Structure formats: C-alpha cells, structure tokens
Length: 390
Ligand code: FAD
Ligand code: DHB
Image 1 (cartoon, rainbow, N blue to C red):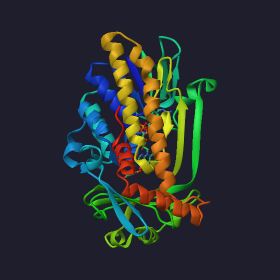
Image 2 (image 1 turned 120 degrees about the vertical axis):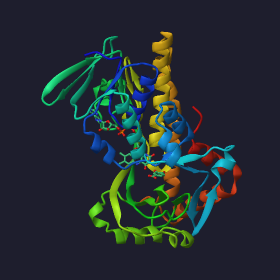
Image 3 (image 1 turned 45 degrees about the vertical axis):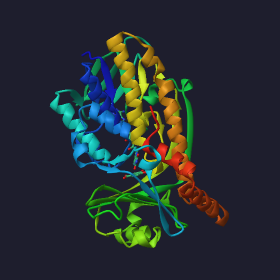
Image 4 (image 1 turned 90 degrees about the horizontal axis):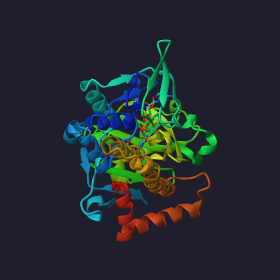
C-alpha cells in the first residue's frame, strides 16, 4: 500500500504528529510494536508546558486536558528542612504548567485517532524503515506472520530510545552524546490526596525526593534510589517512611499514605543523537534524545520536535517547499540542547551523587539558597521550567 507519511511508534510523539497531519489532510499510518493496552500501561511524565498544551489543542485532543488538567503557577524547592516556593507565573509574565499524565495524553490522542478512522497497526513486528536516502522511502513490517510494505513520502521515527529508526541510520552519520547518572528514581502512584497543591522537589542528604500528582486524589511520588535497586526491595511502608524522611517536617506531615498501585524504577540518562534528519527519515522525541526526568522535559521535548517537524511537512505539502524539512534538525536540536542543559543542571543540584561529600552538600545548599533569594536566578529556573520559546 501507499500513504504520505509512515509514523513508527504510537507514543505521544507519533500520535500527536499523526493527528496534526490528518488535520491538514496528510494521510498517515502508524506502526506500533506492542498493543494498545501495553502503550497505555506505561506510567511516565506528568507536567505539560504551555506549548505542549497548545499543540494538543491544535491537534483537537485538548478537551479533557482542559477540563481535568491542573494548572500550576509555582513549584517548591525543599532543602535545609524548609520549603521555598518559586512563583513560576510571577517570574515569567504569567506562564504556567499543566499537570496531566502522559497516560491521559496518549489515551486522548488514541481516541481521536480511532474516531477519525486513521490507520494504526499494533503488534507490528520487525518494522524496518528503508530507502530514506531516496525520494521513494518505504517501510516493511510483519503482522501475524505476513510481511507488508508501505511506500511513502516521509518516515517519522517516533519509536523511543530503543526503537529501530535511529539504529537504521548509517552509524558513521550519527554523533552521539551521553551521560548516565549513578542512581535511579523509584516512583509510585497511590490513590491518596497530594501532600501539597503544587510539586515539591527536595534535596536531602538521604537523596532526592519529588512530590507530584495526577489529580486532587491521586499522588505520584519519587525517591532517588541506587541504580541497581529492585522494586521488590521497597514495600509501601519503606517507601512512605523514606519519602517523609527526605521532606521538610511541614510537608512530611501532610503526606497521606495508602497502598500503591504502581511502583517502578527508572534509570536517569542524558542522550542526544545528531543530526535528527536523514534524507526522508526524521528522528522525533526519545528516538533522538533522552533527558533525566528532573526538569519534567522528556514529553515536552517530544512535543516541540513534533511541532517543528509538522511545520516542515506542512510547508512541503501546502507550499511545495522542502525548506522546512531541511531546517528541522537544526531547529529541534537548538531547543533540545537547552532542555538537556536544564535537566542536567536540575539533576546535579538536587541529587546526592556517590561522591557528594559534606563540601558537595553545602555547595548544593548554597546554590539552592542563592536560587530562592535571587530574582535573576529564580527567573532562569522559571523560564526553563515553563518551557523556552519555540
Ligand atoms: P515513547 O513514549 O517511548 O514512544 C515510542 C513508541 O514506539 C512506543 O509506543 C514503543 O512501543 C514504540 N516502538 C519502539 N520500538 C518500535 C519498533 N521497532 N517498531 C514500532 N514501534 C516501536 N518524562 C518526564 O517529563 N517526566 C517523567 O517522569 C518521565 N518518566 C519516564 C519514565 C520512563 C521509564 C521513561 C522510559 C521515560 C520517562 N519520561 C519522563 C520521558 C517521557 O515519558 C518520554 O520523553 C516520552 O514518552 C517520549 O515520547 P515518544 O513518543 O518520543 O517515545
Ligand atoms: C513528574 C515527573 C517529573 O519528572 C517531574 O519533574 C515532575 C513530575 C510526574 O510524574 O508527575
């Protein structure tokens, strides 16, 4: 068969791109390795920048997010047994973030896609992008033991860090940048009210902790843990005790404990592959870059890549000009690197590293103290957290 754009991967970047393209009449097919429920079962990001919210609206998938998402005007940094609020809105001329889970974003986009009758092939095995150095690329895949081929104009590699798209590019054409951090995040979801109405990022000698939420009655909490730790080592009781030890007393007292219904450990990594465009194949979102979650940037970066690529494809189809596609990698990477820097900086400032000694701890506390008492420093954090301009 033939379509205009084949999208590999039905995570948030693939679904969002598919929806935006359909909105301007560009045909697309999504090929996804696993099934729909598996995609929806992954618990990941929770904080959306305004630009991501606007893009979901543009894709026609913003109604439930508008109704159920929680707008947040600030965050708190916790250290030295105290909470210090960063007023994001006051420091950025009124910008805010929206707390709405990636699972819900994915759900809304999938519902829109099926309502519009757009084609998604789940359980597509051995997906392979080919011929993207020519004007006639195609993608092959297997479904129920039968091999299929889809010819197209463009291939969008929206298949995450472990996907096939980046691996299909000649490896000497890629420049890779990587940093692995010597710890992970243990995260839980529990049907309990959040400790505070805004997020709390805590630096503590026992390690980092984050109080987040999915709604007014569902909390998402994280604690820094050893990189080789196992979920089985963490009973709910141990998690709640450790979390409260890392929070200032006033916040710890407000933590409502309850049974967790999700518990997982995520490694922390910074990774960038350059460039993000190879002829007719573009890398989008986690397929091209990973950031440690501390700055809440992973999903938002995936959305900003989609925005740049969509604008390039729109120019190609509506104005018959390849200029936007040719500019994709440069534009996307410029914003990516700023988010990579911000995520690295937040991670460095808030976590305990194996070699963080008493000196290192004091340096972190001095940086945090400077941050919450200097309008210039707080503004720098705020403008990055709410999202840099496109
Ligand atoms: P993905 O969501 O990874 O989607 C890629 C899709 O491609 C998947 O559905 C996958 O099944 C599919 N795929 C893979 N290989 C193939 C193939 N060969 N053929 C076909 N399909 C394929 N960000 C935050 O901001 N905050 C967080 O707390 C946070 N937590 C995270 C926790 C974990 C464990 C991970 C992995 C990421 C986390 N992130 C977080 C990052 C954020 O979730 C990602 O940046 C976001 O999911 C990127 O979206 P994507 O669509 O580019 O990639
Ligand atoms: C969440 C995750 C993050 O990485 C973050 O910085 C803020 C919130 C979350 O899952 O809610």
